[in-house]
Amino acid sequence: MKYTISIEIDLPREKTVQLLADPTHMQKWLRGLVLHEPLSGVHGQVGTKSRVVMRTGGQEMECVETITRREPADLHGIPKESVVHFEREIVGEGMWNAARERLTETGPETTLWVSENEFRFSGLLMRLVGLAMPGVFRKQSRRHMQDFKAFAEQGKDVREATG
View 1 (cartoon, rainbow, N blue to C red):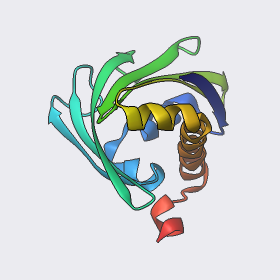
View 2 (tube, helix red, strand yellow):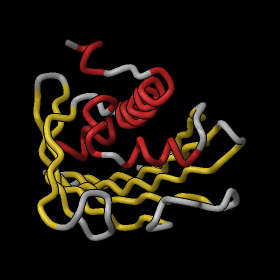
View 3 (tube, rainbow, N blue to C red):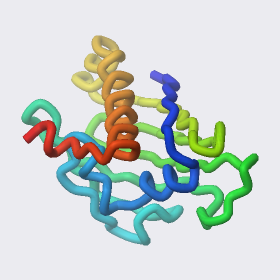
């Protein structure tokens, strides 16, 4: 299953990228995040593997995230015409996901965030979930992007909204 979604953030690209890449802010906008800890490497750098625990609907899911691309590697002084790329693979029980994030400056105070996602499922249960409810994955991705936008633009913290 593959899908692409996008959202415009009303902040300059450099500020958007800084907020998105900063691990201290992740729980403020990544709804359901319980834990995100590097197992090897430095957070956000190519090759880094992290243990990720998410809670959704009373259930926890543990995955391993591997950063596969980050361009440019140094996020300061990025030319306007450049596109910032963050890519990662996430592997959990019965699931593999590749997420490709592109951030493009669309104006002096706006950034377009395009997220391409690909999911593959193994095991009968996960294959059935993928076939029966493909919209759930797209909806969750869109919600994460909307939550980031609200955090970046207005300082909204999803932990305050959900208790």
